[in-house]
Image 1: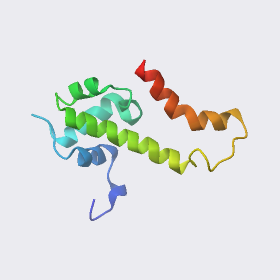
Image 2: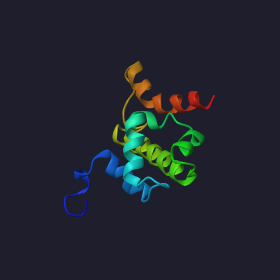
Image 3: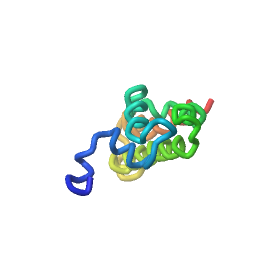
Image 4: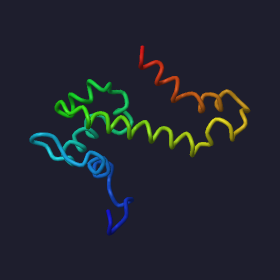
Length: 110
């Protein structure tokens, strides 16, 4: 990463950097590859803390790191898309784009 830049890493390698170390019998890279193989990036956030903790062999800190990274990515994505106030609402899709993350979160809680 230092030599070729962060862009040179694949998703599993990036996730392994965030996790820093693995779980008993599984390196951080092996854990990352397994999670991405089983859930892909777009489905990891569908797991609860309890489910993700189980996937991380009982390591709650790893589960919380992954969910925190996902939430941070969602917030960054909202900023890049223009946030709530910088783009005028001209159609229903504009409202959908602004609210989809919040609505999805609220539905999952129930």
